[in-house]
Image (cartoon, rainbow, N blue to C red):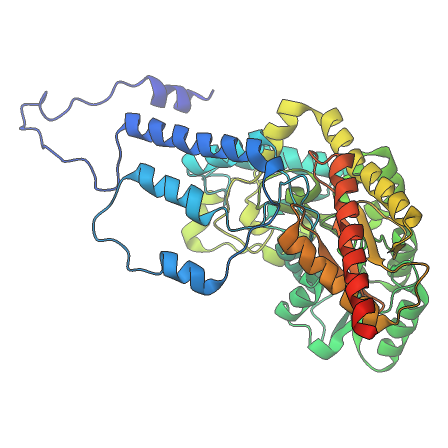
Length: 505
């Protein structure tokens, strides 16, 4: 502890005005303050609601939704002029508002990319909010900033990035993609007629980020994918060559390390070779799939990711954290500083020099929440072996689900399972249905899953075909959860096929 810090702590408080002979001021408590006993009681009330909710999850539905008009009738009102009981307010939120949402941590929530946060992660967010941390600069938050350096270095080493790589935690994959494209644009000299390249399987965050950083919509190239939903490298090479010949300036390629539709992983090593030869920035969108890297299987699948110029990851997906915590890593952290660092006079006191980074200099945010605490507390509590097992479990269950689908007389597998995503549809081998009929049957099945089953799943389009999709990444999910969900799909599929047959006769 520094001498200055010791002096601050050990110095006795100055005498109050009464001790000095002055008449003390009598101040009423602030209107927005609460006594400590009430604060503790309310915190305990919230914790009770949360623990009860988690305990009841397996018996509840994975999804509850309601229409706007119904919710308007319940909540559309003027704010009260005078307050009411905080306990009543908490209970109303717990009973009447929060249940109307997807239960992303439900063991049978298989839609989109669900999330199942650890309890230490939830408590970490509570603590960070209670300490009211703004992790914008080292001066304002040296402890939190150092912990983010620790967590970022964990990620760097897992990926296989060299010393000198770095990054920051973001709100999610969209912010990470945006920061990456700003860095790519600046690193390439911010040229006129810049073009960027991505797959027809890429997440919508990538074209959106391109637009925001100033890439013209007609300069965002969508490259076809191959039979395994990976970017077609021959098509990419042709498009880059054509663009150069036409006077465009290619600057960046966005690869996928776990597409949201199928979990497909692009040929990362081949893409790295191509981008190095062409002088292009390679960004890898690994928002969903990147944390597979903590497992041996994931390392094999993601081989080559360490050669990318930047990588986006979401710890609130397959690293089991509460929202919001994404991450952007750059092979050379200076590319982020050069793109984002601005030093206004009002922040001149925050420059502490080398080894004391201000994370506001690495991305788009100045005010930032303390995101690293939940990752650190979760890993410290459970250890990395538990995280590796949890990630591996998702891949194992998805492989079992694929085997079930391929063995089913009524289901058709639509992809080779990659990471934790299984795509399939109802399409009986003994019936010859056209695409229009199959589309209708499978949309009916999905609607039945929404309204008539505890599980939740979503859909996507593959090669123009409507398909059902399960993303299995919850650490609490069991094979029974997966199997019974597939059995429900088969049951609803038979009903839909029966009705379709009756209507055609």
